[in-house]
Length: 195
Image 1: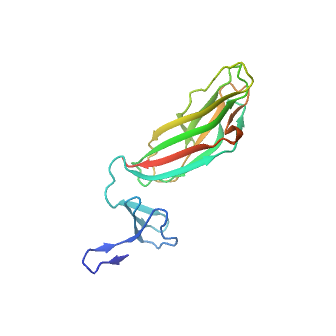
Image 2: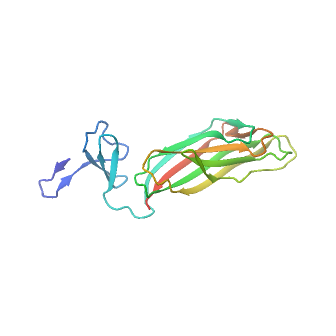
Image 3: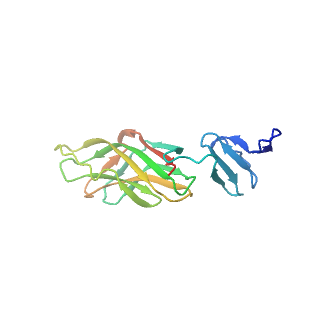
């Protein structure tokens, strides 16, 4: 940080949201060129103030995660798919746009009332039913449903780290259902949107 000799005022350190100082001191101020935000280190965490007020709909940050670990569930109780991502919103008023591709969805007994259901979970609460229930009858023992896609605009109302993940189950709990079957890759994208 410096004071300009040309009389332009206070100039904070300039970096991006991924190249912040690794050992900040309390009161340190930075300007992030990628988010157009000014942040101050309070001794524990970076707190943001707008450098220029972001207009509604501005993307403030993006988080991406993926998994290809096959998971099986043969109960009517939700189990984690291993698809998870964490975002720390810069403002409590922000929205989080969640985009999901849940790949490798299988039902192992196609000629029964066996269905796979996938939900989006935020911080321990299911907030969006991505699939209703996916069911395809073919008379065969194994059915590849393919992918389930989800798009959800959330209002977490927090500036704390927030975990989003998907969970799945067999609605009837009478046979196995799978996600990421055959190491198919599922993806999740979280985008903080100024509101």
